[in-house]
Amino acid sequence: MLTAPFSIEVDGGSVMRIAFLPHFGGPKGMIIAALDPQSSIDQRIVQFSRQNGLFYSFVSLNYGNYERPKFIEALEDWGYYGPQDKCPAWFNGGKGGQSLP
Image 1 (spheres, rainbow, N blue to C red):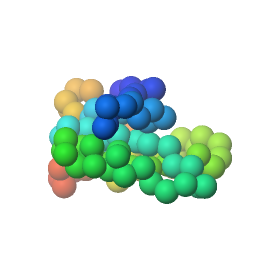
Image 2: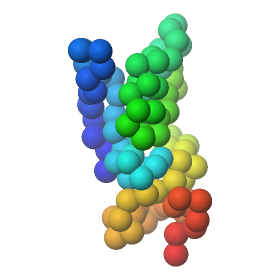
Image 3: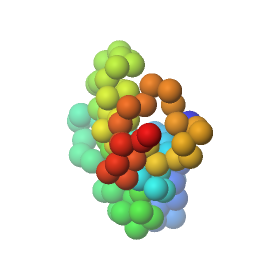
């Protein structure tokens, strides 16, 4: 499950161009934010994530074409933390440092 577009309220304003994965990265999920190669990482997203116990990752806007195997590899690295009955069939990674049965 992916929620996009997703926005967060930081310093009285919204931060857009992000997505939320509720079952990956950590028990509370993770934020995926767009990274424009011409600018730096948005520290507001880093701060919000840390304050709320969320994992975060920045993906370059110049990433290129969607390649399913690369995204699956990233999701497996980040780990699955959702309900076992909702775990994607393709997932072979770990949960909380332990492999899923």
